[in-house]
Image 1 (spheres, rainbow, N blue to C red):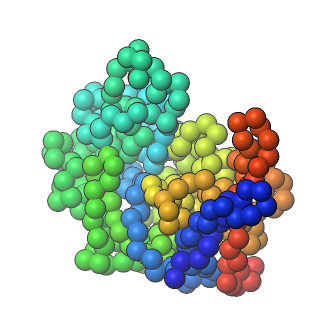
Image 2: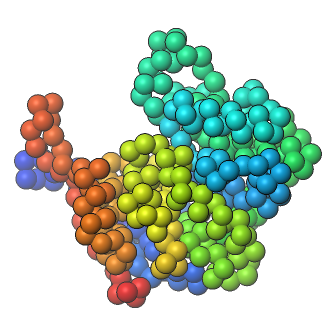
Image 3: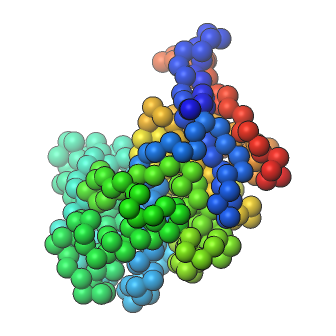
Length: 343
């Protein structure tokens, strides 16, 4: 059963209610704290990107093409498609001898408002570089070029690279391949349905891969550590300037790695506590993520007051009307059922 995770208020009463699940899992696969239903089945969406990027390192492609940590962060990213992001992805493609035409991720409007306006006004041409997933696709193409695999069908779930990725996802989620339901993501690559608990388990592997059991991600420890460190060192490449994901990584000074997924998913890896945390808001929105993440990290004893204040200062839960008048707020209302277990 889902729990009420957050409420939106107006005039002192609750106007909207946001149900969902919050779950924390340790490196042994144990649920150590939860609110809602950890076994709820949803899609991993873009929160899977750090694990989809494992082959670019393990194949040797990242080193062969000289990818920097900033570029590895883009392999894990849902970036905002800013001109800076586009330029970096184009540079990555040049390193592997390809042009943006090789990307099959589509050409959505960017999350960068100014760039989106330029596209709408016809001042900038549409290009797959603008897609938030272009870095992920470029990382996959690097592996494909390095290993001599076929390029034109790389979106196909049966492609050798996608099969390898599925196996890696199965390992870190601790879910058999046959139990993972495949769907098609917004960028046309496969996405993976499993429990929210399984997503938290995978982020525990991202947090401390040497500590998880064999077959649950330990074999990928070098790649996972390198990808997590790239993400926390270059948080704006993972999302965008001012994005909650970047804020969490900046404010925590890299002590927490964060990645969102479409339809209200936020996953966190906490190396010093060897924990993975997954927050899923059932209505698919993101407006409650800041208060939910702050509350979860606070209840788990991970967040100090300075970090809390800084995150909420940048992602203010107050609701103001067109005249700037305070009319309500967004507040977390869940209690994790056993936070003392990880104190």
